[in-house]
Length: 164
Image (cartoon, rainbow, N blue to C red):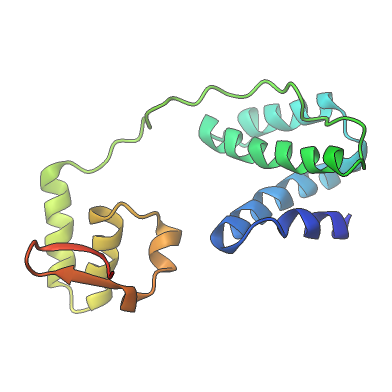
């Protein structure tokens, strides 16, 4: 199993690998907690995982869908490599994820207040982080993984971005 997991994770790099490993570890832990060998799981077992995520863990549809995408990919590799005849994750009912996020962002004045507070902070990293997240729309793992030497301010336009 370790070799199979390593081979699967070897397809990913950087933060994608970190997040994929987290979701895969979640599947393997769930199987272990329920006395289930992941390689002998049936579709009904994966359906139980989905119900458990929704009903017990109260995960949002987007979280369930993301975790399922890793489960589906993991089992698909086992089928491709002829280690399983068919995937137990085939034909799963996936939760409906709205095309637009129901999470509301900051309003114009709220965003301006956060930027102003960050600009006035004694810690220059505060403004850098707010600029990366709010002005460039980076995700937190992208912002935290950024190399500050690659970022700069275009004084002609007042915009921020990656140096060319």
